[in-house]
Image 1 (tube, rainbow, N blue to C red):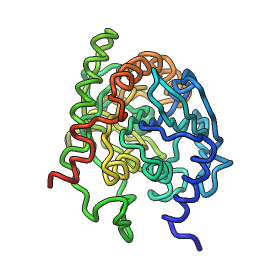
Image 2 (cartoon, helix red, strand yellow; image 1 turned 90 degrees about the vertical axis):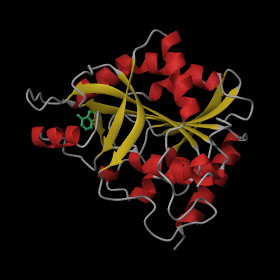
Image 3 (cartoon, helix red, strand yellow; image 1 turned 180 degrees about the vertical axis):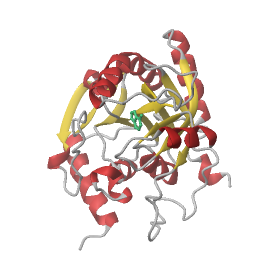
Length: 290
Ligand code: HPA
């Protein structure tokens, strides 16, 4: 049987042969947000189903393609649709695309997701800059033998989200006149959504938004030493004293409605990246400073 590393290397080789370039920035677009990548210039698309060893998205609202193209001359590799633990993939399998990005030399990673708001000051349609996260999935993609070339056994997690990129995102939001909330994302396994008692608990432990993705990919990207920027689109509010059923169609609709504003912020951040396409000062600092 092929090792995890061999599977990733084979997938990366295939992707490289198809895109024929070396993008500096990786973008992962979540539920209802995938269209944002279709405005890339000089676009090349590779279906996940063509890539050896790549999982296939089964979740609704996810397209299942890698798109490679440019935003203002900055080369980007975008995942249009992600894999979730609740689909039955292992945490490691969920991170295969992140490892492919790492092998391709990507040093900056930007992620978006759809999430339920827990902070009562948020509203449906808000964009939240993820400043930290809580992994409450009960699992971790780094369990098992460590691949030392890819990162340390015990990666530091004290500064996962890159301060330079966050500052650029805040400036971009100001310029776009978009109110950018900030907060802590808690990732659960799902797929059942949260009970009011669980929401009360999540708020108590410091979460501002809840979702069923993201933590696996972020842990892998942090292990890889990437400079990370992440956003949640608040697609519904979870208020334990006034619980409202969360309908999937409404979540998709809310994400789609907010997508253009988030796209504008991300495009500005990417456009302001240096020629090396990375946040030079802090990329990988989580590992090297310790
Ligand atoms: N809970 C979990 N995941 C979600 C939610 C939610 O309320 N909204 C969007 N993704």
